Image (cartoon, rainbow, N blue to C red; front, side):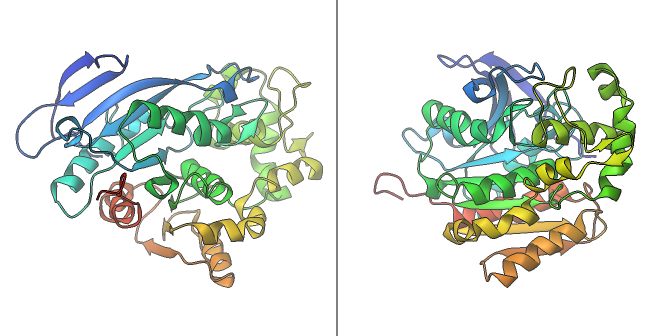
Length: 355
């Protein structure tokens, strides 16, 4: 676990924005600021889970932002994982990663150029939105590519062009990054996919493990108390097999009476990147840069290697790296040494004819 190197010293309302600003204590290298804002998602209105369409977003502003006058910055949109939230990723709750500390350290070195980073809170009633469009969860793909980008461009000094937008994510967020990225090269020019989950279509065996336990759940309160696999089944069903006529969960589970339901499995397969990717090869070729990584001891490594193989078969330019590690133990190192330098190299820092 990482510890915060510098205590938060000031918390105040940012003038004119309604954003909470968390300014880090002075001393040593210059620090960036973190703002906590609310972004209304029209795409999320009326979701059957009952989640608020007003989503909290944490925004990192690099050290030079306040003093650089009219300077504009590229933006990296970072998607967190299942059962997670920005408070954990941004160090307000002790976790395996602390993004502001990482960004401060990276930018202090001078070799990695400064960017704005934004992370929406995708923790839902079923503990993860899967960044997909669904009547049950709300249209999260539309929110990430639409209202979120529009808000950041309207409220911060961004370079508001595709060449200056990046998309990254870990685990569920890695799934969101590859799925959304390959469908929207008109929004993002570069993407970095970390330890992506949920890449392959379900099988009777894989769906059956959690499906039978999920069938025994009677309320959202029970979902919150369930084991990780059962929670994941509900989140995936809410995202990929919603059913507005099936209260109280408004989902179709992948099993019924313990038996796999192929018709529901087909809906899940339609949202599996390894099954979808052939349709989006032309989009992937439009992107400036694509990077993928996974730990060799990560249980997801098999599917991530299959993703690399498909991109190789189609001769889609990308980088793929494996490393000694499991699902979380080297994530902070990868963000510092690989993810942020990747975006520094591949995003455009050109603004209105200036460098």
